Amino acid sequence: MSHVDDGTLHAYLDGQLSPVEREQLERHLAACPACRARLDEERALIERADALLALAAPPERAIPPFHELRHARPWMRLRLPLAWAATVLLAVGFGWYLRTWRAERRADAVNGVVALRDSPQSQNAVAEPAREERSTIALRGRAADRAQQQPTVPPPSTIVDSLAKASTEGAGAAPAPIEVAPSVVNAQPRAELRAAPPPPAAPAASESPKDAGAVAPAARGGGGGRVPVVLTTSWPIIGLDAARPTLGVAPVTIPGLPVRNVRRSPLGDGVVLVEQALDSTRVIQLFQRRADQPALAGGVVRTGVGGREGRADSTFRRMYAGDREAKVMERLARYVGTLRVEIAGPLSTDSLSKLLELVR
Amino acid sequence: MAEDLAEIYRTTFAALVRFLYRKVWDAERAQDLAQEAFARALVHKPENARGWLFVVAANMARDEARRAARERRHLTLLKGEPDTVGGEPEEEIDAATRQAQVRSALERLTPRDREVLLLWDAGMSYDEIAAQSGLARGAVGTTLARARRRLVEAYEEGSEGEHVARG
Image (cartoon, rainbow over all chains, first blue to last red; front, side, top):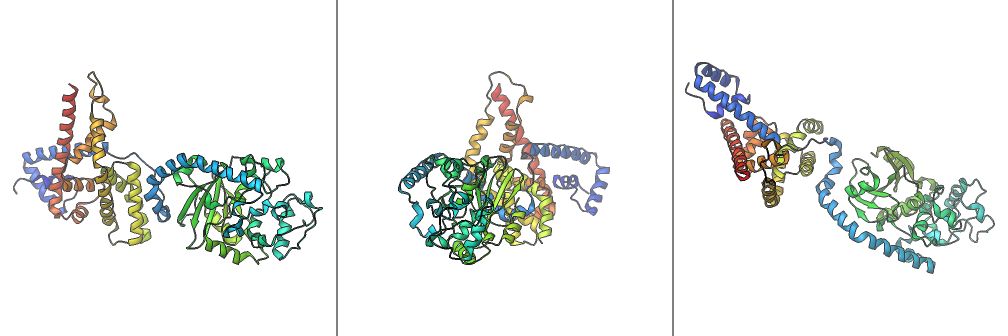
C-alpha cells in the first residue's frame, strides 16, 4: 500500500472508515513511520479546527419544546421585525392614540353618547348599557341603589331573568328591576359577561356609584362620566415580545392554536390580550395581566367582548341570544404562573374551561 | 413520523442551531430558523428528515447571510480593529474578537469546503454529508482535510495580521 492521502487520514480520525478500510490503514501505519507522523499532524489539525469552530458557537440556549413548533411558526418568523415594528409603533403612536381616545371619551361624556352607538357593532358593545341609566349592567352589584326604580319595560326574554339573577347574586338582593332598551336585548349575552362581581379595588366604583359599570375607564379617563365602548378591536396590536415587559413574562397561549393578534389594553392597566383563532370564524381571547397587580377586571370585562370577527359575533349571538343559559358567557379565569388569565370566546363554558386548562 | 421528528428534534436541534449560527451569526435568528425548518418538516414529512432539515436550513440561511454579509464584514472589521494604544497581551483578546476572527476565517473558505466542515461539525456522518453536498463519499475526507487546514491557516493569518497591526 502506498502512502495514505489526507482524506483517508481524516476519515480514519473521524471514525468514518469502513472496517475493511480501517484495517488496511492501520496495517500500513504500523509499517510506515512517515504516515504515523502525518497522522499525528492531522490529528492536531483537527483538534485545532474543532477548537476554532467552538469559538464560533452560539451561546447555550434552552431548546424550546417540540410541541410549540406548530403554532409558534408564524410568530417565530416575524418575531424580530414585529418587535421592531411594535416598538416604533408604540413609541410614536400610542401616546397620540391615548390622547385622542381620551378626548373622544370626554366628548362622549358631554354628549352622553357613545361613539360606537350607531355602528353595526353596537349590538355587541357590551359597555353600551353603561351609558344609560336603564342599563341592565348598571344594575349590576348596585341593585340596592336602584331597587326603587321600576322597570318601564318588562324583561323580554328568559335571558333577562337569568341575567337579573346573576346581576343580583353578589348583592344578595331581590331580583333587580330591570329595564332593557330594545336595542340592548341582543347584546345581553355579552352584557352578561359583565355581570361578574365588580372589582373591589376599582376606584371609579366609589367615585361614581351610579355608574356601576364604569370602572376602570372612568378612573383612567379622569372624566368620571360615561364609559365609552372600547372594543378590543381598537386595542393596539403589539408583538409577543412587546407584551413581555407588561406582563413580566411572555404571554401565555393555548398551544396548537394560531395566534392572531397580541394586543395591549389602551387603558394602561397592564392587560394584554392574546387572540387565537379557533377556526376561520371563531376567535378565543385570552386576557392576561400580572396576578400581583390590582384587578381592573371591570374594564377588561367590558372591553373584552367586542369581538373583532363579525362572523364570530353573529355566531355568538345566534348561539346565545335565546339561550337561557346566559351564564355560559361568563368568563373564566385562572392563574397561570404569575399571570391571571381570563378566557372569552364563542364557546360553551365547558369548552372554554377546557381551553383555559390548556393555557400555558 | 411525528414521533420520529420529535426524536430528531431532541437530538439534532442544537446542532442545527449551531450550523445556522455559523451562517447567520445571530443566535436568536439561528434558533428561529431552526424552528422554522422543523416546522416545515412537520408539514412536509420528508423521508430523510435529518438531511432534509439541513438542506432547508442551509437554504434559509443563505438568504439571511447574503443580506447580512455586507454589514457583517463591516462589523468584523470594526471588531478586529485594535482599540488599544499599548501592547495588549494576547490573552486579553476577548471572546468576541476571536469569534469574529473565526468568522472571517470561515468566510475565506470556498463555499463547498465551508459547508462540508459545518455539516461535519453539526454531527453529520460522511455518508450524510456526501448525500447533502453531492460529493462522492470518498471525497468527503479530502474536502474536510482541506477545509480544516484552510480554516486554521486563515485564522492564523488573521491573528498575525492583527499582531502586526498592534505593532
